[in-house]
Amino acid sequence: INIFRDPRWGRGQETYGEDPYLTSRLGCAFAKGLQGDGDYLTVAACAKHFAVHSGPEAIRHSFNAEANPKDLWETYLPAFEALVEEGVEAVMGAYNRVNGEPCCGSPTLMKDYLRGKWVFKFHFVSDCWAIRDFHENHKVTANSTESAALALNTGCDVNHGFTYEYILDALREEYGYTRFYEYDPEEDEEYGERVEGMYYGDGTRRAENMRHGMRGGYGRRGGSRGGMRMLY
Image 1 (cartoon, rainbow, N blue to C red):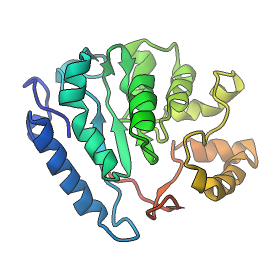
Image 2: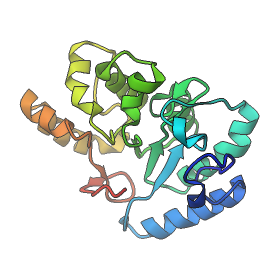
Image 3: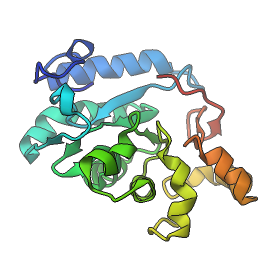
């Protein structure tokens, strides 16, 4: 559901064009068609790439998209807001930065807008290797450990890549992250307790499970979780 403005971007043919309203309506219809309207999701739809992700393809891993508030709220965010309101199960962050903040570790996009203003309660996933970009390309962190901590602190549930191999290092080195389930809905406490037992029972098991960056997903409407296969 990205807005296609720059022909240098290599995925323009996958979008709905330049119209934010058209993009939001078609995006919502597509997500509903995937997820269904029953008690259980038929498949989890993912809205991507959040946000302002349509810059030059060659520098997408280091590009800083500068968008003023008017353009951000009138052009680039409406489709994402609409899909969140319609109950899309996942949101994927973009590779680029927006106004200096990497999209998969952006307090403004993820905390203020997505989790805060829009009250998004489901899972956030990084684009492939986007968290590694924090230190390798954006230079906002010094290493993989700091990148993992930044993403976790900001609310990135799933790492599409391998940077979350450094989760335990981030915890040991006290980068400010206190618990894995900070962003889980309150009604999901039972699941959180079950998974904490799985991951926190012993360090080896936790490291093995978290190595893949997966924390599970929502399988049933209303908050309860179930097994879910991620499709990209």
